[in-house]
Amino acid sequence: MKILAFRFLLLLLSIISFSCGRSTLGMAGTQPPSHQMWNELLQSHVKSDGMVDYKGFIKEKAKLEKYLTLLSSQAPDRKTWSKNEQMAYWINAYNAFTVKLIVDNYPVESIRDLGPKLKIPLIKDVWHYKFFKIGGKESSLDEIEHGILRKEFEEPRIHFAINCASISCPPLLNEAFMPDKLESQLQKVAVAFINDSSRNKITPNQAEVSSIFSWFSGDFTKKGSLIDFLNQYSKVKLNPKAKISYMDYNWNLNE
Image 1 (cartoon, rainbow, N blue to C red):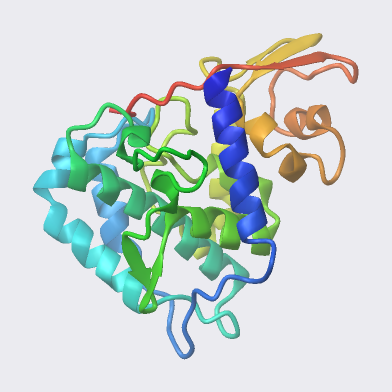
Image 2 (cartoon, rainbow, N blue to C red; image 1 turned 90 degrees about the vertical axis):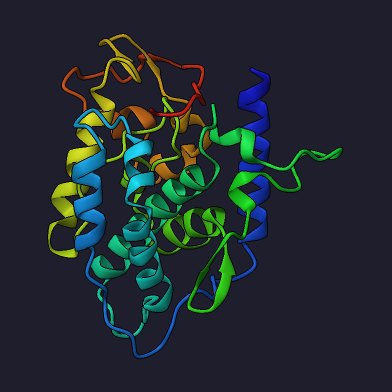
């Protein structure tokens, strides 16, 4: 429970920090980059269940860095890129830079171990690290998730697409997100995650679901209740008055 409360407070801090305006990340006059290198890396080093071979990524670190350099130099032009081109870019960027974070610090038991040890918590953690640049500006995973993906697109399924390198996270998809396939890919990861009995235990009258649905409850209830949202994707349909509880989160590395 302490871990859940800690993560919830971090989330509140992130929301407050990005509520004052739109993220400034982006560039003018760019073209959407190819995500082929990232796709090849994912197919080589991520299993169908989302488990990651970080040692394999380390062996191909040069290729990973080349892809990340491509992302950094071709940030989205909000005026000319389509919505799907922008979303695919930011989802892939979040996942690829997360992999870089683990690769650069491997071996590690949990991504949370990489956060700075501060006397006063809640100021910064690993998600606030500005360890990469987008369009020449230092940035963090936190800004991509809360300042861009959640703030600008209002697409709750992004929570099943981005991966935090942990067991309880929605599995890392072993293919890059592509603009022309984005809708089907988001649908795929939503259905897979919600029907994964190791992460969500759903019966008609009660459900023990991922803490993600608690932390980001507002994202899932804009068009109805959480039960309404779950029933869009769950094979087992919940009754309107079903009891909802939340599972503990396993932050161990998804290796």
